[in-house]
Structures are given as structure tokens and as C-alpha cells.
Image (cartoon, rainbow, N blue to C red; front, side, top):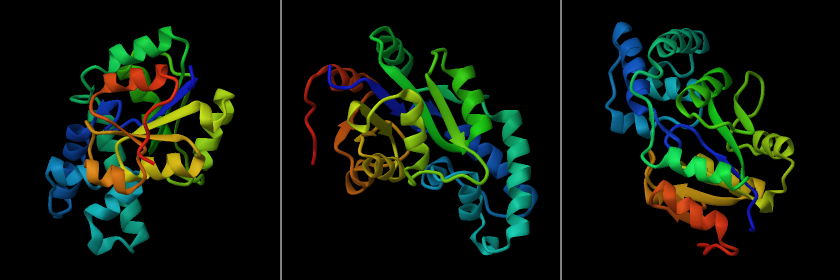
Amino acid sequence: MKFKGIIFDLDGTLLNTIEDITRSLNLVLSRRGYRKYSEEECKLMVGDGMEVLVKRAVPEIADDDRAIQDLIQEYRREYAITYKERSRPYDGILEVLAELKKAGIKMAVLSNKSHEFTVRMTRELLPVEFDVILGAKPGTPVKPDPTPLHEVLRQLALRPEEVVYVGDTSVDMETARAGGLLAAGALWGFRSEEELVRSGAQVLLKTPRDLLPLIFSEEPERRG
């Protein structure tokens, strides 16, 4: 078996979280008199962390650090209440994770969501034990910077060529390519096939179950 480990993005890859994110964001924005967003619009805004999400939501004050930080704190408080009301694993994810775990594949979660929420949501909504869970921490680089990816690899004790990175955004594909991992695009997630291909996806997965033959075959078909 060529691959010994998998690193997953969280939002849009393992968990469909967009409804709770959109609702929490819109509650905060409406209180301040800003425009609200649809779930489809929010799908294009997430992926780079909480601060970037808020800045994209209110571009008119994006350069006002104090105002942005105030909004971030309010969003964080609101999201802490509603973060798992409707967030759920994608269809087939739990079964695939169970099969990978049974086969002895090492598994990790790497997200630009805050480390606190990354850990809580992974443990509370995915009843599978991951070897590493890492989210965004203050003062540390986030994806697509490969620094956190290298930290996950270190903790897994695996080489880049032994690991597949699965994600649903350009940030994920760029992260995988920067770290030397096979970049697998999750077509069930938040972004389009076009974006995934453009940003370097080497393999496209239509469903979570497509991950199994990729892991267990000796030489996966790559896009380049």
C-alpha cells in the first residue's frame, strides 16, 4: 500500500458546516446594520480563517483593525453557541473513516478554523479517533503556508510522499502542493471543480468513498 496517512481539511471536506457559519455570521452582521449573505455566497468566503471571513463580509471596514477584531469576537461568541446545531458529516464520511481506521491508516485534520473549534467539532461530530488535530493558533502561519502541514507530518511521523491531502478549496490544493503531498480535491465540498483543478488538484474525488481505492491502490491516476 503506497499511502500510510491522510490529512483532511474540516469544513467542506469532513463536515458540512456552512449553515451554522452563515447563520452566525448573519446574526452578527444584521445587529451592526451590514448586509447579510446566502449560504452559496458564504461558501466562497470561508477557508482562510475567521479573520479573513469577517473582512470579506464587511470590506468597507476591512482596514479598520479595531472594528474587525470587535466583529470577530462577537462572531466567535455567536458561533460558540450554534456551531453544531446543523453541522454534520457528509454522507459516507463516517463509513470511510471507519474503514481507513480499521486498515491502520494514520489520519489527521488540518484546518484554518480556530484550533479550539477544530478540536471540538472533530471530536464531537466525528466519532473516530484522529492521530493529529490542528487548527489555526494565534501568531502561527495558516494554510496555504505549508508550516502547519509540516507540523502535522512531523506528528504523524510520515513523509510527504506517504500522505494524501484531501480538501475542497484552492487553499487546500495549494497547501498540499507546497508540502509535496498528493492533492485530492473533494467535489462534494464548498468550491467548484474548476477551482480545484486550477489550484493544482492531482486527483478529484466525486464522493468520500472514492478515497478508498485511491489509498489502497498502488499507483493512483494523477492529473499532473
